[in-house]
Figure 1 (cartoon, rainbow, N blue to C red):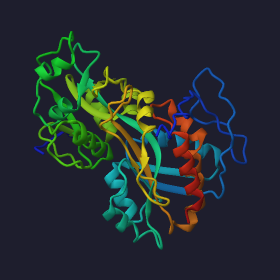
Figure 2 (cartoon, one colour; figure 1 turned 90 degrees about the vertical axis):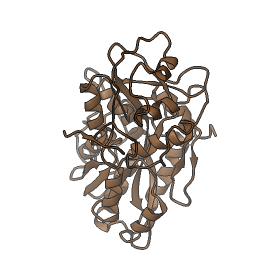
Figure 3 (cartoon, rainbow, N blue to C red; figure 1 turned 180 degrees about the vertical axis):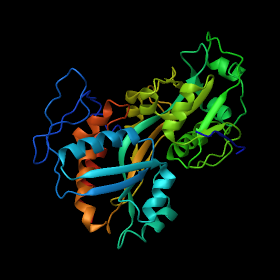
Length: 376
């Protein structure tokens, strides 16, 4: 991988927080009950069959943050529904939205809701309709680190923003030391990694900086990285790999990638009585306060990146599946609705819960489930 250096209320209750370690899906029209998510040495509980409908092949692209979730879902869906498949390529949220507006994919994954100009662009491929945002994968952004001799690290908004903008360049900088009393920090250069591709994860991180850095981040929030210095890599998997390999490094990835790569995650000092750990439970507390900002069948959310509530992790993100409300391709519409129905179901959300994601709060999941049958 080439490295590049550049200069640039509680209404949404957390009832879905039960995580499962295994899942088996009864096949549609077959005896194949392999779900691909069962833990070795355990017997998976029976689960309701997926309503498969007409077999078809879906092509999708976009967010790498939801990549591990899609892997679980497409395996279970393919096992259950003979002749149906989901071919999902990452490339980042920006690339996914672009491919959607070009009519190349049936749905796109984006960690940022469509902007007005992007909605207008979707009308060319959504005949008689437009693209809408369906929140499907809830998660959190871990600030992952690999620092010599450091097992636990606390950061806050201003300090993290300054690290990623090369304003803080040493691990023993007084600002980091003040947040980590008793921790021996090395006098080593900070190796900061950011996304090289247009990324919804970057967009959410910089939205957090805009709200919580006290002005330390001087750039507008964006999918495109604007900070000074640092090194870049493609996708969440690329960033995770670099942090795992490079000493004294730091980056930002979805919690699932932190877990699968055994990376340490920093706690965040939000101003609450104690730093908030990067856990699914703490992210769920933040999602419980999320509000729907979209109208009609569009379910874009407003998230509180500046929360100071006890146990509320501020660096959260939602991956939306971008679909046409009307004007979907007739030959794949039934398969699309079947796959999305499974993904939004209790079984679908539980299946990804054990891989570092946060099951959607039940009220929000119900709203998503109500929209999917109306797609045309």
